[in-house]
Length: 216
Image (tube, rainbow, N blue to C red):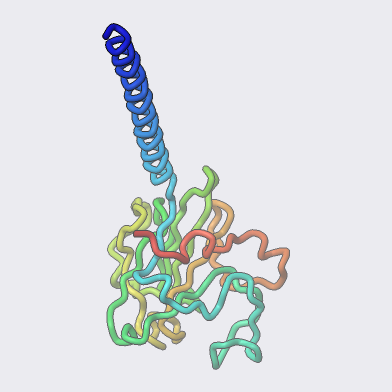
């Protein structure tokens, strides 16, 4: 009888150790999950760019960053520009030709320029930061009258900037309705849409590295 009691005690001790081990293991798993969630939230804070248009992944980019454009090889006809493209051109969706299309700030920073620009129509320039270094962002082919911010205002990432200009009107300098975005790797304002050499192009950053995908 004593042997039976002894065996029962041994079994109970083994079961107790087993459940204690399992509980500790579950606590470690939950701690790891909480740590992963915390890391994810910290990484979200590091997101400094956002697409400038809705449904960005559905949009065609007919002029990519760095492509060499001439009136002869351009996918846009007629073409009046020649050079290496300093930005990207987001095309409108078929149903947006006669509709207002909102443009959003891709980053947070100060509005430095708001004016008509040759080749752009309405345009603005915003200063932001990338890896704690200053950059300037050009938004081209906008309806100037729709932009409520003034020079010196701070625009936050995701804020509505204004509307795309009407197709082939003075608002777009008679270009098709689309959005040109370029990122110049400096605090100085440089609104050139094309440059003459690949060496000059090194002063610009490919916007598609940061804004060509949807963020939910």
